[in-house]
Length: 186
Image (tube, rainbow, N blue to C red; front, side, top):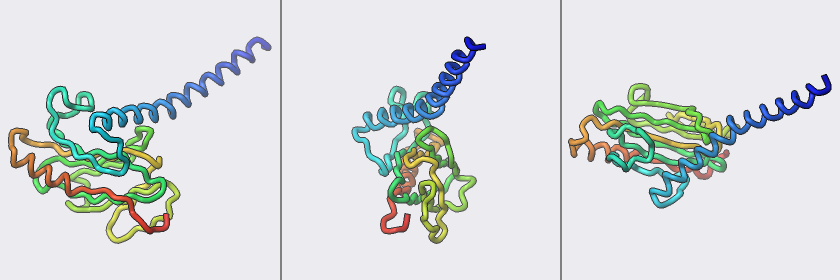
């Protein structure tokens, strides 16, 4: 029995260490490396600033096997000190549109798309857990499980050869804005 106790302790410690590595460290590390790669290709590492993407072509996508008919907007957000307001505009036609929020550990904790949104024009406010921010008007409050996270909007282009459709979606894309909210109790 005395020989079994050290092995049992070793197994418990190893199991706890592997669990922490796999469930906490690895997802955070992979998010950081992915974001670093995206920003390296774009030339800057800016937080709380929306980056508007274009249609991708073979060899230019940053996400492996991503849909080539998708136009994306991407941001890393940080709500550690202030809440962030997101003003969204959804395309009028039948283009699929979605907004996804990811915690820094890769958990997808919020999704809204063109069919589930309450209107074609709406606002979200992303806050950290425990925030004292009070809802104003019609905005929807979303509590981020981590202070930093990923903001991603996807729009599907129905005909990538239609220059008018692409231009229209680019206009809609730029109507979505994010900004930190100043002078509020947080």
